[in-house]
Length: 123
Length: 107
Image (cartoon, rainbow over the protein chains, first blue to last red):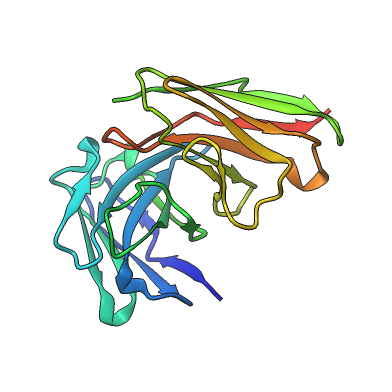
């Protein structure tokens, strides 16, 4: 089955750190750009970051630049999001999402999503 | 950033109704727009990309139209499985941005 499964969420204090993981299966993970998208409780969707198939290009939304780092390990079919200096406004369900293009310029929309992992930043 | 304004925010409808959701962009995005469906506790599902191209496996009762700044998602005959929240998404200007969502609920 083609799927993405996120993990690593939890409760963290403001200023703390957390590392999210996403594992892909049922497809050639190393052939796709990958993304993180988040959704605050009761709110809409916000794109957070993406990374090229080989990890050589990375892009971030301004609100997380300098605090979050996206990375991947294609040998483990895994995507990561290292989140440092967390703020209350980072509280959200974090989704891993796949760009549909295979080994080409990204399309920038998402054809496969995981079910998300919840991050709560609170004292 | 490109602001995506969806309307209505909530839509009450019955099975069999024709439903139309509108999404407006704050600047032209050509046809680089996608629509997603999300049900409570589930991951979003891609319905349409490039404003009008139906994703494989999506029922033909879903259709999309528009270009530039105004777009619509239409469900020709609402089915029980279609009660959900729908989001538009522009993907031509960084940062990628989404609409605030339209919840289709039972009338």
